[in-house]
Image 1 (cartoon, helix red, strand yellow):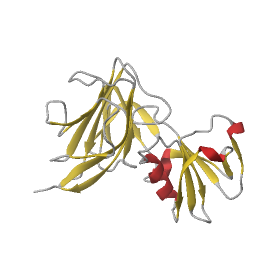
Image 2: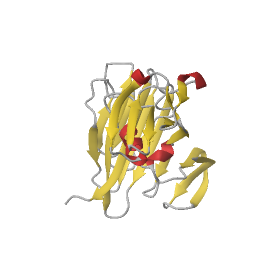
Image 3: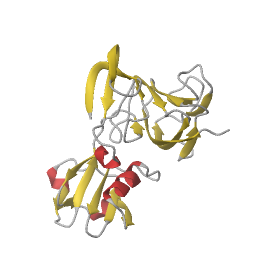
Image 4: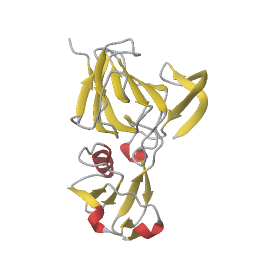
Length: 235
């Protein structure tokens, strides 16, 4: 991913123009695997830290399984390309001592580089969004706005896979994630997540080609992650 400071994307391609206080982000790869950094021929030293095992999976499958896990926060996985097996973990290796050499596996750890305060065009990939520093840290004293744009004749289909806040109360002005059917807060509110009892995964569709997402963390800690696709507009 690269960051073009003080620019944003216009019309879905290379139309960048100055926008004070706004950063533009774009990943260099279409695949979910681009969300991870690899350590070849290594695995987590403590095998008890793996939470889920998947067989018959490609590297791209494992990358998607990790980002869409809802029962725990997946931070890394080990993948055996010959056996097509991956093991997901909610642990990230914080030092070389946490991993060991294993020729049959490669270790993949998520790296937190997420866009904030931008419009993401339909050709932005992989179609994953999250709060800055997810999955390692929450945000606080921050507001992040995201617009998701679909191609013509399509609608945005968003799936929230993870949400956390350290408060359990929920009001109209509380911290959390709010999703609007359109470009901004003046449009119809489709959903609001502001307490940890929210049922996930949560599926939301726009009625048109755009969803607006507001992530507000003022008096509490907030973290979220979601994936999205584009479907035909319903009539």
